Length: 269
Image 1 (cartoon, rainbow, N blue to C red):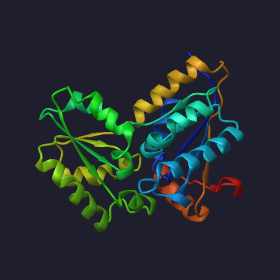
Image 2 (cartoon, helix red, strand yellow; image 1 turned 135 degrees about the vertical axis):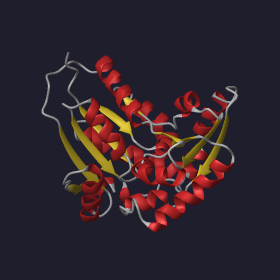
Image 3 (cartoon, rainbow, N blue to C red; image 1 turned 120 degrees about the vertical axis):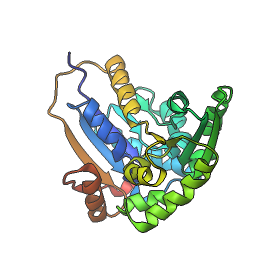
Image 4 (tube, rainbow, N blue to C red; image 1 turned 60 degrees about the horizontal axis):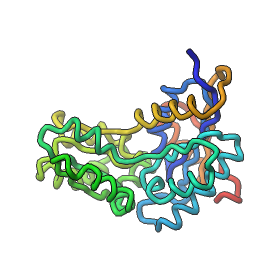
């Protein structure tokens, strides 16, 4: 049985959302995917919610102008700041967003201590506070750790550098000391650091990434809300608000094949 073919717009503060895009491509092989990295304004974690909301609205308008009939906010911080606004403003199309995978982590933990690695913006958001409250009665202790600098390391393509290892050691150590046996990768950039995180924390710590669940949810939404169409060949287009040459180099490394990133039009910068 085939599913609807659509144009899916995906955006993140930078290149981290490519980790989600990979899952979307695996789950929905026939769709045209348009990805926007807002690398001219990365990281979102230290920006105000109002600024992130403004950027998210601008990028969503660009994606819809490109024909997107579904949008994925592949960024936990942008989800916290702008998901509600985008759903109100663009209520005719599915808007799929991220949130740290607390429920799957609770299902996995044996020590009953779950650590969350995320940006400061995500951890300080009202949305995340509500998520913690929702699962507060499950007799699991949830420890959080802001991770300044990790997004920038991924943006530079430094997935295995000494500096990246130093940051990972610094941020995971307090969580492990508190007994966490499960770590939520609460930023879409962090799955690209999973091999190095695994080296640092060892094989006995579970790492939880929500990209696959987001892709499945998107598929269900498209099947339920978009008209059926024939299969397409599947394609990807990439845009950036930063330097297109730098973005092309980093995206190619993360995507696993050559990517040519286009500059966002001036009106959306």
